[in-house]
Image (tube, rainbow, N blue to C red):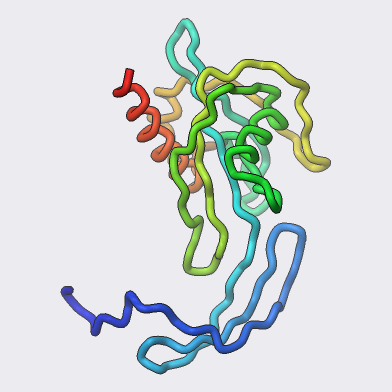
Length: 194
């Protein structure tokens, strides 16, 4: 250990928790907690449902492409190019949520949806998890079924272009950067097995 007293890796104890805001996407709680060294503090914590995203690998004559969705994001006031995804409903397995979101948002279905990794979107203030999956060789199979306020365009984007541009322009969604990293690692392990 370079610095510190060893308490940084120990859990804090929640003394009290009070809901201060609730909406359809998340709830915010104010918690008072005691640290391992005895100090107390107040912390804002967002409780939210888990999210699942799927990175669809589509083989074309030109090479590998990703099936992606383009949509307006209200928080950042930008149009964002992303992998399909959404909320994991209560009682739903994350893999089923990923496959469902793929079908609902794009109309494409894959027989092989494989787990690539799970991360915390922002463990400093959020309690939920972000589950990443790869979908191999999806095909257009069903009618899209968008939520009431979803306006989504679907497109195939060359995988090399996404890799090159990730983090720029319409590809600045931090969770998509994480999703691409985890999916590429999983895809590489699958390719090595062949």
